[in-house]
Length: 232
Picture 1: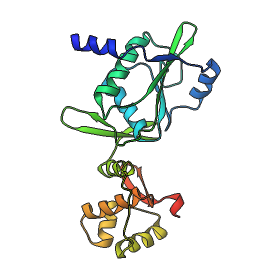
Picture 2: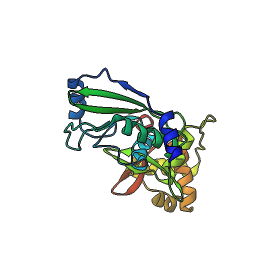
Picture 3: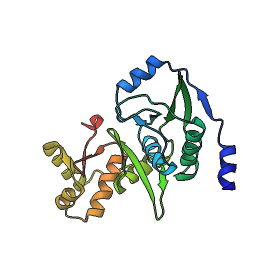
Picture 4: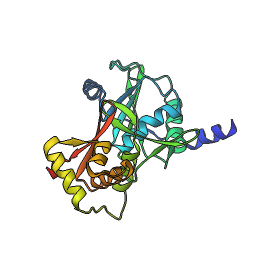
């Protein structure tokens, strides 16, 4: 209990008053939850909110509006100090490495809405600590989903200072011809195409994605690789 009190005293007082107006907030809420926006009734636990924060940090950043229902109703929060405490605990103790974010409070008469801004992390991936392992999350449409092993590697490579290079050999030529005809490919299909293990085919695809040649996306629970727009 003493440790939590000490943490609370150290990590409160970070909330600033927002310059956003009621109309600004209404317009933002009207866009709906999506890749860059999440609504929360309240912070129920540091572990749960850490997943949302982690997903935004591992993607392109985003905002979490606390005190807003899923349908967009602005119900407000009971205590911004409690929300602030759990958010700091999530970012500093549950996320690893520590996640950077800012908090603002918007007064709406008798209601207060907390605006949490999570920028894209400079060093990826950000993980959420679990009982037995760490898990990375990414933003997919209006959900925060678990990042696959391939996606985690791509995030790591994207933060590497060494840069990514790839060899344009026979396997890559087969891949590019396949993608030009069928537009997308799975790790399993690529392993059959070039007659290697799925691990080896995955490494080739991850390397090409890290170099900006391919894009990784998910559809119906299956991951696919396709050309990025700039490489078409």
